[in-house]
Image (tube, rainbow over all chains, first blue to last red; front, side, top):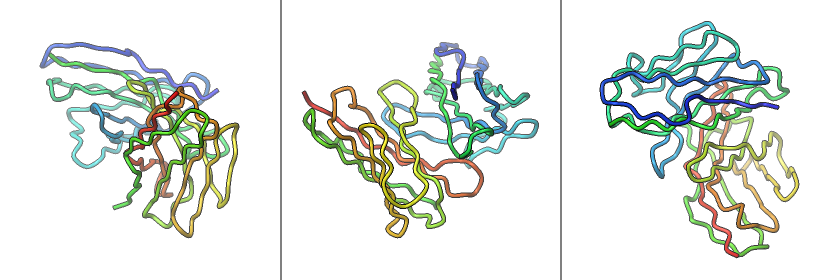
Length: 118
Length: 111
């Protein structure tokens, strides 16, 4: 149980284009999903908390107009990187919280999406 | 600022030995503690969670929590080369469900 998928796993795009990343909880419902970014040899950085049916909460320094988050259902959250630039190249990872679990603080991670902006 | 501190390592242990990974946290109100393993190029994988003081064992892994000292550790018995990875300590500070992650400790198990 507690499987989270992400799509795509890899994306290469030209500078200025927008990229959408999907995060799905496959066997549980997730009212809250989290989006992280990780640069090479650095730690996970929380970008935003995605709440089903409401606006996402962004961490300080993360541009909400650049990183659009939509959490339209209990199993799907999307992150859209708008007008991507080379400095946005990173490993984007989502996690989901299982609301049916006994301990709801537990987060399960998706496999990640590697973005390369040329 | 709620901090989660880990020694970045690398921690090198021979195969079959016990690896001991440590983590301290600053928020005394923290309630939930997690260890994740992250292989290079992959996303984190949950290994263990612990919520109350003492030890919790799961196979070769033992998590230890001491809330008075604000300290949580992970012991890996009979370490294997496949255990070589970065181990992330994560703490929930009861303000929502976000986790605060340490920067991770790199573990290398040598054959």
